[in-house]
Image 1 (cartoon, rainbow, N blue to C red):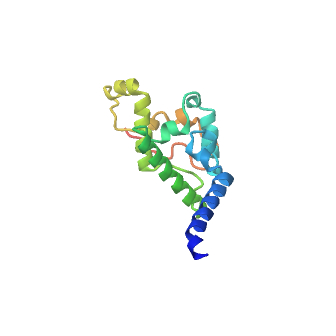
Image 2 (cartoon, helix red, strand yellow; image 1 turned 60 degrees about the horizontal axis):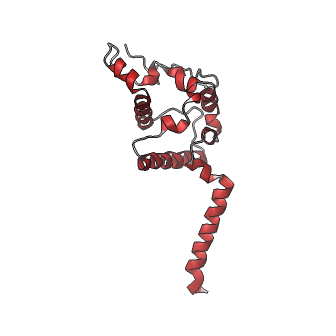
Length: 163
């Protein structure tokens, strides 16, 4: 019996992971379907607002929230954020209102610039400069007007207005 133990353990692990992947629809999380991003209840208003916003017709969540430098960076960040989300949800630490981290803000800003390079070039050369995140002025573009959030849209501590 002991000579078969490693094979039985590996087979058991493969079966358990297969069942887990099937039950949780884990394969969907490797894709880019926006409905998958809305699986967690705290994303309901973000998804709903994106669904009714102008960017819905041209973007998905992954277009803005994941890096597009290369495939490796894309999937590493997807895995990192996925494991973070699972950990937060599993331990009951999911906040009621989700805000982008500094790391995420950098990725989002890079993607704004990537898609709107011509416009960004014009803005950088203008008196406005480039010392702000795009969404500080264009708050309603990607997710539309906020409706269900418990915090005000322009919370001055979260979104300081630069003068």
